[in-house]
Amino acid sequence: MTSTIEVGTGEKKRRILKEWEEVQGRFKGITEEDSRIYVHLADFELIFNLESQEAENLKKKLVGVKYGSRISLLKTDLPKKPILIQLDKRAKGAFPTSSPTKARGVRI
Image 1 (tube, one colour):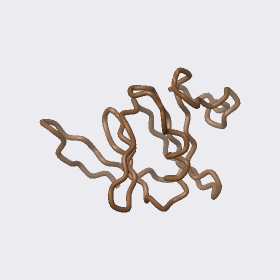
Image 2 (image 1 turned 180 degrees about the horizontal axis):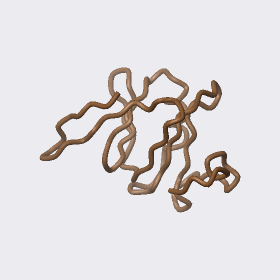
Image 3 (image 1 turned 90 degrees about the vertical axis):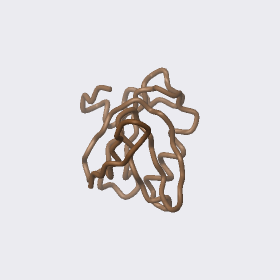
Image 4 (image 1 turned 135 degrees about the vertical axis):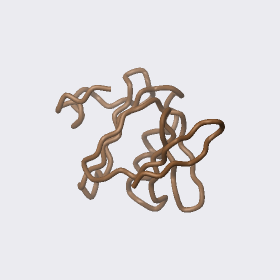
């Protein structure tokens, strides 16, 4: 599901990831509002249910990540790892080189 919202003088897309969909972008922040968590990237925002496992994983991995760092998010169908997060090497908490997305050659 993709919808467009007004942001300032331009438009910014809000997205909900489908299983095995991956997005990459520059990290601009993470916020909670109502029953949702928003991951703000340069060109769009990702929306997750605040009570979901994805939200828990995002809060743990993205806290303290530098503004503007490149990140990659992959939604999976794995119950314990519903979202895989890969961070730029200079961002706090970056995955080791043996992460699942790195092993498949995904570059950010």
